Amino acid sequence: MNKNDTQKTIERAKKVLRIESEAVSALMSRIDNHFVSAVDILYDCKGRVVVTGMGKSGIIGKKIAATLASTGTPALYLHPAEGIHGDLGMVTRGDVVIAISNSGETPEIVSILPFLKRFGVKLIVMAGNEKSTLAKMGDVMINIRVKEEACPMNLVPTASTTAALAMGDALAVALLEKRGFKKEDFVLLHPGGTLGKRLILRVSDVMHRGADIPIVTAETSMKDLIFVITSKKLGIAAVVNKNKKLIGVFTDGDLRRSLERETDIFKKRAGDVMIKNPKAITADAMAAKAVQIMERYSITALPVVDKRNIIEGIIHLHDLLKIGVV
Image 1 (tube, one colour):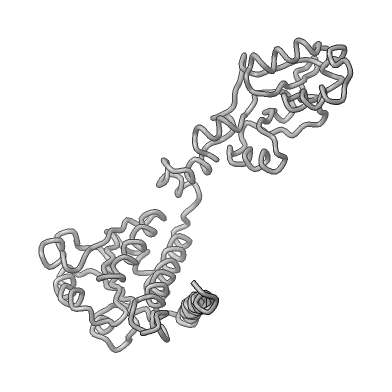
Image 2 (cartoon, helix red, strand yellow; image 1 turned 45 degrees about the vertical axis):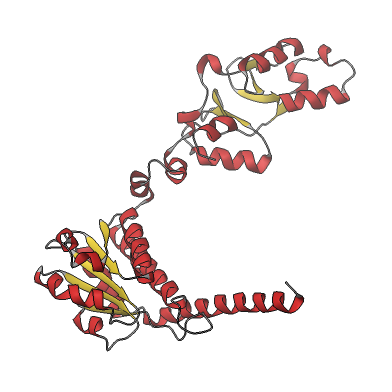
């Protein structure tokens, strides 16, 4: 690719992003009473939210349905072409339908709306033409019109699908806030993913405890200190006083550094080489918080202490990796 072609590609990509960002920005002026009415209809829905759209709008519809479902609103996607061949059976009284069509004249959607109306369902239309057939049939119409598509021919659905996606997100987020949807609710719907684990797992669920904790005192010899670090296989030893309060730590990394600067390290005791005032965490903290501390200070293990600074366990980065928190 020559220099001119390279520059042309860059300029085209920038223009696409500019057109699409302007399309989304233009939606802000259309967040009005129609939008509020749509949120109210979704909030009052006693059944499911059925999202329908054809082609690229259908793909956007699937994403909107998925976002609604993941934020506390039962939702599903209905392919309009399949709808007229039996799939309308998935729509029941009490449902709400969101129909997406940039033109507002998509034949497959227009053909199923009379049947949907027989169920008495509320219809929210997301379209780019306020005078279209779909707009006239809807209980609420949200205008997602765009000035132009991002493709050079002004034909390929690009800016219009981006606008529909953004408006769908706006509906979903406004609705979850109206529902009082909380982080804990989100976790219940995402128990298997990394995100769910980050939100639900606490340090107490992951930490090593009891006999697995590598504990020494300030008087522990260097030989015994190394043995504890090695035998417990956590790369760290917690140094405690007679009341089991944490006063320092010593890691395998500290050992390597000590060997470099000390002439006879085996004459030292744990209290001589330990790192004082180490970073620590409480058992009730989120496991994700432990990850943040480890990343910030470039460490792989953290002592777990209670409010009195008494050692309760050790949490290691490898364990967090195994369960998918990292």
